[in-house]
Length: 178
Image (tube, rainbow, N blue to C red; front, side, top):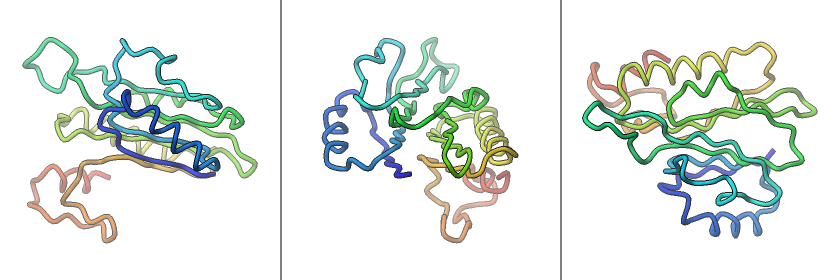
C-alpha cells in the first residue's frame, strides 16, 4: 500500500495540483493531508477526487477562549482509492484536527491515522490526542497501525526519541506522556 503525505497549509486552492500528482504517481492508494483549513462551508463535491473516497476532519473547536468563533486553520483529510475497503474510526474523531481509518487488506486490518497537532492546543486537547493515539495503537484486532502527520514538535529528535529543550517544555511533556 502506497501512502502519500503532505501538510497543505490550505488545500482548497491546491486540489488541481494534487490531482496532477495523482496522474503522475498512479500507484498511490492513500493520501493523508494535514492543515487543510477546511470548514463546513466547503462541500465534499468541491474537493472530490475521482476514484477516491474521502474522510475529512475540519477544525471544530476554538484554540482559545478569546473569540466566539471556531478558529481557522487545522484539519486533516484522508483520500483512499475506491478499490480499498476502508471505514472511519469514529472513536478517533475526539482527537482535535485528526482522524483515522481502518483498511481491510489481505494481510489484515490496518489503521491509518492522519494527525495534525497544533502548537496552540491546550493540555486537555493534547491529552485527548495522545489518548486516541494510545487507544488505536493498542487495538487487538489491528495488524498494523500507521501514524502519519505534523506533530509540531521541533525540538524532538525522532531518530533518537530525545527532546532538546527544558524539562517543563510542551515538547518534553508530550514525549514523556507517550
